[in-house]
Image (cartoon, rainbow, N blue to C red; front, side):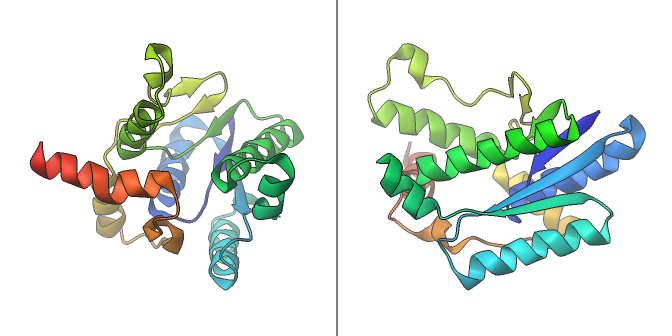
Length: 192
């Protein structure tokens, strides 16, 4: 099969890419990496872009790095930066799919992301149908790591000595998802 892989350079996406590279030999997968630089974090984002580019070149994987001014896109469309970023990423994935006649788009969402999403929807007052989590398969989008805990991903990366980048905005409390990730979920795990 021909698969577009969304790769930010973080632990989750680098884990996904490395796993797909390994099973790709057995299943004859052709991978096409897409990296989106949201132009929010300046030099840090540029370094991640270069990290992903170099990794793909070293491993003979097609890579398309895209720059998008997500903050401006959010202002123009009157939406959150997160929503604008998601729109830009998925649009880039779809375009790469068409360009290379791919049948799947692999995204590195994991079990922790799913828990965050359910809580996010719950806190926003979602109705029953809106409180479902992330789908493992949604048309051509596949999420092979969805039943894998973040801790297992980090352990795998350490055990296999695979490098990855750490996005400093994951620690910022400017985003609701980070508040859920960094405060609510740890509190619930410890106290409830």
